[in-house]
Amino acid sequence: MNLKWIDNIDSVDWNELSHLYKIAPLGDKKPNDLKMAFSNSMYKHFVYKDNQLIGVGRALADGIDCSYICDVAIHPDFQGKGIGKDIVNKLTEQSKHHNKIILFASPGKEEFYSKLGYYKMNTAMAIFKNHERCVKIGLIG
Image (cartoon, rainbow, N blue to C red; front, top):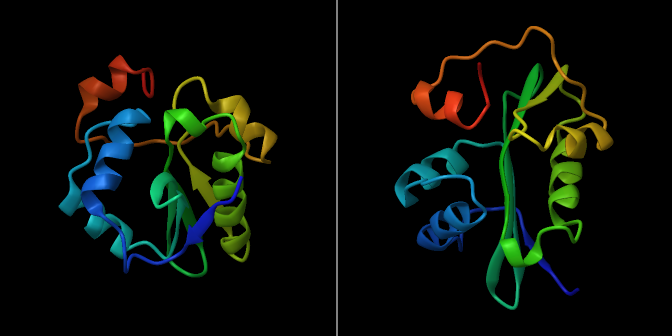
């Protein structure tokens, strides 16, 4: 499969990215919110096939201590083809000099990330803006 990888936000269609998150499905993320989040992320990858955005991921990193890999989404028609794995591996490689690399796995995806070298944490804690949604989808108890 001939894919085009872009690691900057110069040509991103934020409405197209918002739509990708809806159908992936990773929730309703507004275009302007995505623009801010990706603008503030040290590492990011956008994957295109024939000018269609089919995959994305980013890492919010401080340059030394912590890199947080998040917002990895793959178009449903392209899931299971290794694109998500490639995105996570690229973000992990870019983050390798950090003391820790962290990510949240969507419920049911833990094994996928485990195969990529990630370990389940025993003490992770979080506060979520939409607590009820996180309970409903099984992210927290």
